[in-house]
Image (tube, rainbow, N blue to C red):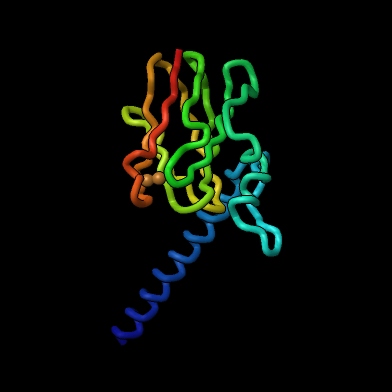
Length: 158
Ligand code: CUA
């Protein structure tokens, strides 16, 4: 009798997990902005070239999308960021769009909440407002091979 209760309990917990998973994926899907294309290579095409022709990654760099609001498109590859240096005005409200042309990289700005992964075939999105002037360092904090420690960039806010 007791065994039956345990079995049903186990099944119940499993079902709860599945429901939570479906719920989470639906919510996440809803949060993906519509202006970001998916990176889908054509048959026989390398992921890197598919990435470089897929908006917004066909134009890496800074773009002002509304007064004070910026879109910063970043590509990671062994062992550099494209663009390697970024300039922003003080108070810039930035949405970063990031991906990788080869392997997993990190995109981390110390002393801020900017911390994301740059993954091949995936789009990472993160918003941050730069309220303090200065030179910020961008660091790859995901081990990516021999010259990982040299993979850095800068954001100058003034
Ligand atoms: Cu790129 Cu570590």
